[in-house]
Length: 393
Image 1 (tube, one colour):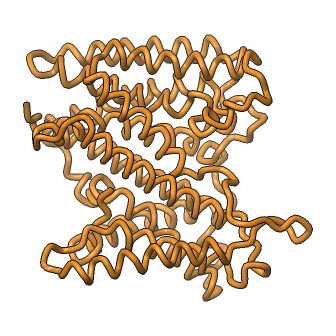
Image 2 (image 1 turned 180 degrees about the vertical axis):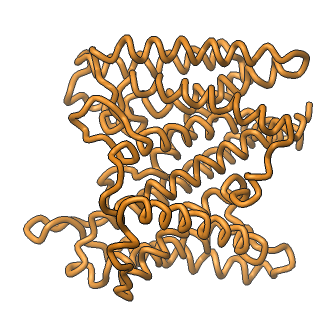
């Protein structure tokens, strides 16, 4: 059954707001003298700042989008295998992007032969050439040529790559999966679970609970430190990342089923948020609250925040109080492009050696600069998506 537009709008608006915050916090490295609560908390600290909520928030929204995306494909007549194939394609694309971008973080510019700025610009260009949704009026030979050019660009980068320190040079490899890669793994597992359990809330809850218990077991020292299967659970943060995405899918499925006839999902979401907050803070003495260590307490507290944020955003959308959303709308629909554009900006700045004076990078003036930068990026994504680039995985 098609869902009313307000429900999709609420998720899009929450996604757009989260992407806006993601661009801002990713730009904080360029600032000086800003409040500590905006930044990531160190790994050995017990607590979290705004930056520690943004990534889990995005993962939660990825999960919330799954029931609607799968439902749309089912309405088109696709079966489980066809939907699973699409999910696998999308997941692999995110893994590839994450892998290339994270290798850029460890690049040895001298050994590779070019600067990190060029690496990011060329890698993102390869992504766009491969995964862009080209206009239907373009000829197939042209589209295939562009996609092959993108693939050859990435292949050449991987062959040329050298990373690490001068005394320990390494080739292209998995340092870690990067933000997009972590999203890819969590999306892949949560989406396949949703498809193959037909969105059964009991199975989704079981998947979420298994993720939380795995995360708790890891932080309680119950898992062997050198076990071979750790390679398979480390990309999902030993359960933390899937805790967000499966939790989001579970919440969205409850929302879909209950909101069709009544609005008692408000109470369910608020009650669940209170329980998660209580458990998160109650277990804080055991594991602490830490994004970098991906503790269970952090997972539960951030999940609670997102449930409350969705209620608030839904109420705004329902009451047609969404004028604020227009300026950041592309962040809710062209999210991946919004994420990639800053890599071009930082690459150009590095290569051209363009730097703003310190007064414009300090304190609240610097924060205003980052907010303005994020809005410009989002508006640029909106313009590009209308003219040429529409990344549809």
